[in-house]
Image 1 (tube, rainbow, N blue to C red):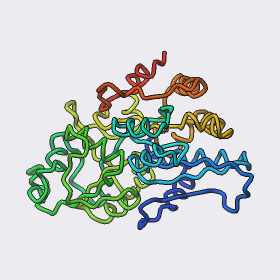
Image 2: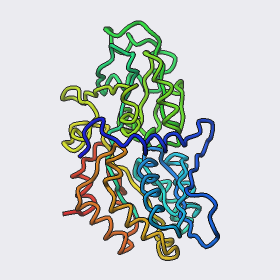
Image 3: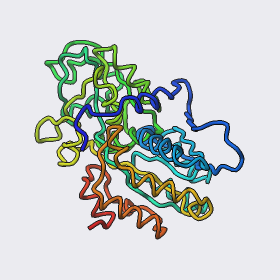
Length: 343
């Protein structure tokens, strides 16, 4: 288990530094100068899952010079659009696949294998210069971010009377982000329900930079980006009804950081597993390296979960366990294991 603040800075700084803030879709392909004999594995999707996948890709290619793994970032929604169009082999996702995406994949004849790879503590953060915002209730988060707040809730003392009479400045993921989908559903009760007067970006590093120097700013994004920048940011404790709780590996494992704990996934094209010989080898390697998920700041699953994921991969078990109206908000690690049939 990783304690708060323990992370391999050199690796995390390297892949966060690779982001280009002005790009709508970011792509990292390592190494370059490839010969045509190399097999290509194409990955796109969530910026939250990106740090894990890029770390795995880097380590895999260090030991396999015959494969190039390219990892792009266009958000969970953008990644699924490419995946369901057959353009990628793997889709990184910070939420389960939606019904509309299931239909798109089905219509295109794309079968997929759903594999949970880690857990995240979706983090609410403010600047280290902020000396007054230590916690928020779920109700206050809703008051702050709900659609009706736009143009109406603009000063911090409107959220809580003891807060200063200063301007609210908000940063958050763009609408293609699975983090946006998950946060809005968890806090507002409806995916996509949010005020629009905030600075949005699919690049979490843009959100970090926006908050760092503004004591009146607040943002939300994946735990790994908070861990990497905790010398410049501070996390806000969230009160889901039983008192304020900070995001941490321990609190995710104990299921007390609610409702903002969530599973992270990769979706693998089942037919490509058969036609791209290195794809199964790469995914098996991915599932054998939960230490890399931990290294970049996320929570590894129990070993039995990765064993079950490998079985699902080898047996070609397709589809999602999150269909038929199953609520994905507040799914604990044990709930996830139960859904996946892990004993």
